Length: 215
Image 1 (cartoon, helix red, strand yellow):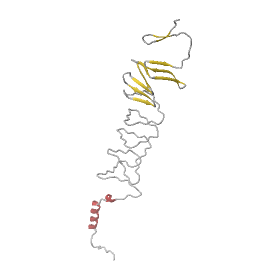
Image 2 (spheres, rainbow, N blue to C red; image 1 turned 90 degrees about the vertical axis):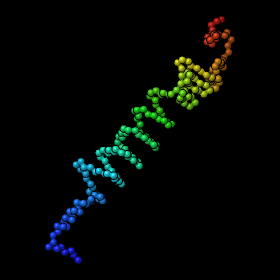
Image 3 (cartoon, rainbow, N blue to C red; image 1 turned 60 degrees about the vertical axis):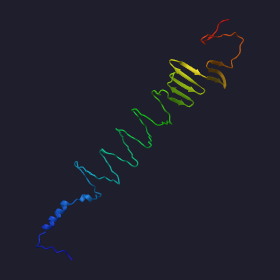
Image 4 (cartoon, rainbow, N blue to C red; image 1 turned 45 degrees about the vertical axis):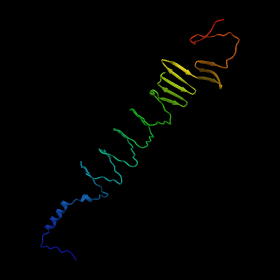
């Protein structure tokens, strides 16, 4: 059965109804864009209010991405060009740096620092008073009554401009045999050869050692 138009009746009412439907329609509320894509040009802007942008594939930005709020990134991020971080940066997880790392400003390390490669120091190393630099069985101690101290195995060496150098319980060994031993106030020299010459060693009341020329 076919539709038969009444030629004696005007079609104006249908045209008005169709125009009214077009005026009130919102076709972008549920739209799909195919291979031809969507072009926004001449300063046009796409504004999203109280909604979101969901990208399942990829998003390519040739200009500038300006974000005022928060960026939440899950997964791997790859930055090929220069990356500038002008504000504070907080890193909670592990960070691996394969290339060169240059730090121009101050750097504070509050945790344990492990350096496994060769380290070159081109400026001063300042150690706070009472702290130590450990070199195996030798420790360098800063501060104290003598201004600093080198702790050795079996003794200590202290040095300062006011007190000079102090050796405590120092032993010099040659070929596994003790030859010179300083253990205040005793100086011991062992394994000395013998001679029939007259004594020529003199020590004054202040403990100063002289070679005597008296005969």
